[in-house]
Image (cartoon, rainbow, N blue to C red; front, side, top):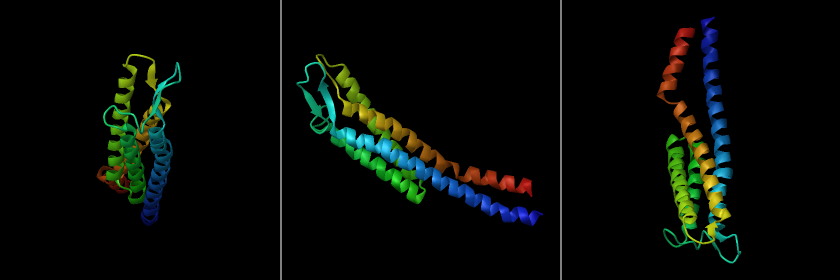
Length: 171
């Protein structure tokens, strides 16, 4: 009877590994589409607009608050997030997800700074739709990058020790 349990154990570990791969694939795909996709596309759209008169609008490519073309920064970080998510799934790497998470936190902080800057300006100028897309993408990307990072952390030394203890008590 103990031999049957030992034979079934590698299949259980293999199923756990398969679940980890599928879960990281799904969460990375969602992060690329809803996180990085919104960040990259929102970087090109309107960041500053005049909703009252409709005379003034400025895209992320030409908006100059920190440097000329602040949308180029967020676009580069959005591409870095996508690369981190892809590498995280391909290599099952906690480090790649960590890099994507750090880049996403930078995008979120940068877009919040831009929103606060535009909301505190005098006049009829307000944030545009592109800036809101970048912020929304950074929130979605944060959740997906954090989920991938935590999934890779789950298969670390503690869970291996836990599986060894469960196998010893079951047999």
